[in-house]
Image 1: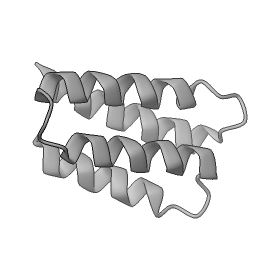
Image 2 (image 1 turned 90 degrees about the vertical axis):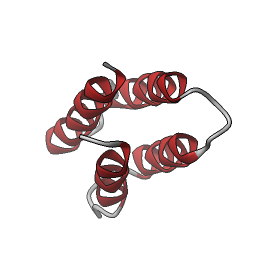
Image 3 (image 1 turned 45 degrees about the vertical axis):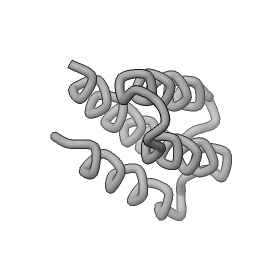
Image 4 (image 1 turned 60 degrees about the vertical axis):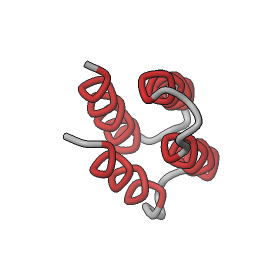
Length: 81
């Protein structure tokens, strides 16, 4: 697993028409932040995980969307190790 694979999943998820706009906005920001080179990679990953976890807790998000978000979080946590 590498960062480009995770960024691809994030991009793919933002293209999902059933994904709420709020979640798409957070994923877009997370993707942009992960691409920045001005911070340590582990710090960028931790910030991304927290951002995605925050929106995944919303009760209005469909279950399939939560599953996609949890998959991305899992991939980010694997990169952090």
